[in-house]
Length: 290
Image: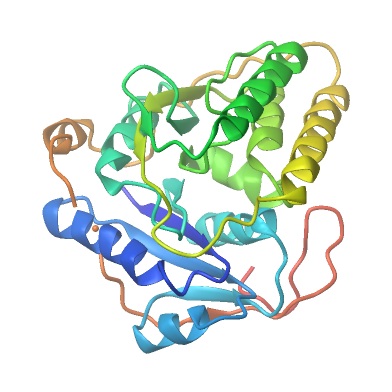
């Protein structure tokens, strides 16, 4: 089973090495070896230099394109190279690799197409940075329930595992700049199965969040509009998909045996580079690996 971590990074010089070390630690502790690719989204700090100096596999956008485009680049890479599962894993150190096995298991067992690492269901934990963000999350949950008839407790979580079918879908259809809630609306209406599993998240290791001050207001506005658009461009009611039967070549017994372990894999290889082109629709890349 091939599993890829997609690690978006914008000005993460303070945390990117720590993030990669959490993945390498996972690989030292587990027989399942995670591969990873950092998407350097036009960082203006030393992120690129750190990636090059430490031989960390990465793709660099020549200019900042937004989190949605960065993650979609990762999904395109995963689709091109035939990964069975792709996991979004933030470059700021908030995500905990110890929960990766729990997130993979429902896909391997054929129970879900997308698994959300949720802070807000029973067993989940999160550091508190004020009630405004939590209130915003509840509002987005309400929007998804009203427009998509589905309750999602942590719709803004960026810690998500996607099956090969979802990877292919996201490779061609992914929102920017704030994709998580809108992409959930899209998947629900397309009939993909979504499951939440409890995870613990840390405070970011370094740097600053891109969603702050006036951007919080824009984030809520954009998210509301995008969920509305994703639901109203569909007709009828959400589709029902026939389960695909789990990830290809997955060893369910191996997954169960490793659940109590922690750990993360070093991959050799030169850094991939893409050149940029003005996006059309959901984004295109000229002279790129895609």
